[in-house]
Image (cartoon, rainbow, N blue to C red; front, side, top):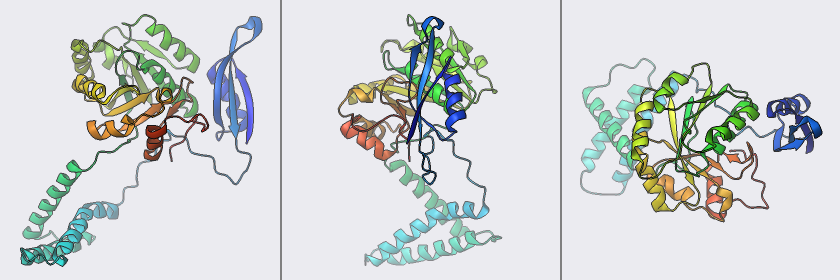
Amino acid sequence: MKIMKFEGATMRDAVAKVKAELGDQAVIISSRQVRRGLLGTAVEISAAIDNESDVEAPAPAFTRQPPPPQDSQADVEKLIAPLRSELRSLRAMVRSNEPKGIGKLESEIQALRQLVEQLAKPAAEPAPASAASIAQAVAAAATKRRETEEPALIAPSSARVVMLVGPTGAGKTTTIAKLAAHAALVEGRRVRLITLDTYRVGGVDQIRTFAELIGVPLTVLDRPGELANAISDEDELTLIDTAGRSPLDTASVVELAAAIGTVSDIEIHLVVPSSSSAEAIDKLVSRYTALSPSRLLFTKVDEHESVPELLKAPRRTRLPITWVTTGQSVPEDLEQPTAHRLGELAARGVQPTTPNRNHRAA
């Protein structure tokens, strides 16, 4: 492992030197501001790269996956997959020697087999009416099973516009900075920051400092109603910071919900401090119901020996987790965990003997 230090006037300059010297496979270990005597401050980055050519570097946790190839055979397989599953279930029931309804099950198995054969043909003729009715029944049963299935623990972010909402002190602004730094400096995407946090003293100054260090534009809005006009199609990722308010202030949530109604492709992440109890998390989800949040984002995981709600909250609220924060460093202490990693953090927290920075999701 080769480790080197680089300095630049800004974070962008320092990252550019890292890429020029070590290439795109380099991993940023840490970053900090340093003094340059009378010249002010600079940004120092420690970066590492594996010097063994036969070892493949880990892929960035935020790498966007290419869209799946459009394949007609794959479409057919997706269509008949639930039918095959239902066929296996019916066979198992028949083989269990249950006397009731065996004749009916056998006829349904035969009809399902015929339907599968019809769908598997490249130029199949329309299925008979009896098979079509069974197909509808199977589709309805599959939908019912999905509704009763255990909800996912994790889910990647795929939206072009991401908004963070949550209580005061949850760490929304710092998390926004981590997301922006990773997307802009590591992935090289065009990122814009938007803040609605003009309520908190010093909120705008804090996020403006982050924006200048990262080198991304910042838009400050006084009212949520201005949000739709501030989002540009030229930006690959727009990150929106919001103000934390009192739990009794429901009017601000309603106003924000009305504003995002005209914004397409937006993803709402509910930011949850890791110290929150199950009751507190449920109240947060209820309070922000009007915004229809689709993800949970746990912060300050490093401040607790265990965070069992990392596993319990997604199942209870049916909201998966995309990111967790594990420290104060920007952008290192941000993880997009796997289900296995989520289990580790839930049981043991961030172990001081195990490096948690630049954790890559498998």
